[in-house]
Image 1 (tube, protein in one colour):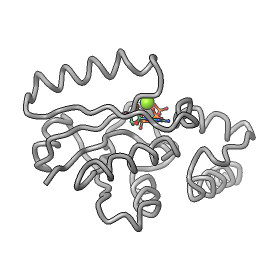
Image 2 (cartoon, rainbow, N blue to C red):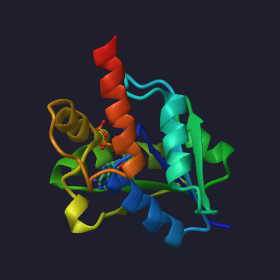
Image 3 (cartoon, protein in one colour):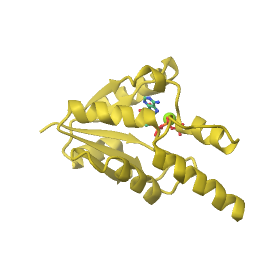
Image 4 (cartoon, rainbow, N blue to C red):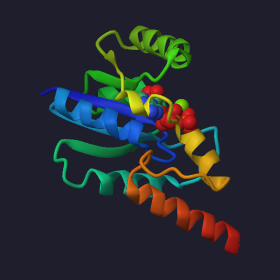
Length: 163
Ligand SMILES: Nc1ncnc2c1ncn2[C@@H]1O[C@H](COP(=O)(O)OP(=O)(O)OP(=O)(O)O)[C@@H](O)[C@H]1O
Ligand SMILES: [Mg+2]
């Protein structure tokens, strides 16, 4: 069975992520969306919120799993008996960092392959950071994130304003 791990922070899940997950689900028997437990950046959505949103969005996809991990990614990949790390490439700007990570992971665990996938063209400029920035300034993010994420973003902003 081919199992792939798609690691990231998904704060929040965007349609770019969704696109990559759907491609992965077609390519591999199972794709595990793995959310990093200890991020440097302080997240807008808590880890349980991010997990719940992604599970809900992929409710009907039997071979998409959502999990969390801590520590070295390659250790987690081994623990899950996976052989592939999936990463998305948006633009040249992603390349240098991704290249370094892939080679470092290859050195740490030669058995694991990193597979890069391109999203559909209309998603190539979307990042979670940009979504948060635009939304917090009152811009429209419709069509760029799942509807559930739009709803949760609205709730977050209301909660912050109420506080
Ligand atoms: N729009 C997109 N198209 C394709 N791949 C993407 C897209 N957005 C993110 N990815 C990829 O998804 C993986 C997880 O990314 P991550 O959770 O850091 O999302 P992000 O949008 O880059 O968030 P942030 O803006 O907080 O860095 C990475 O491999 C990243 O390159
Ligand atoms: Mg990123």
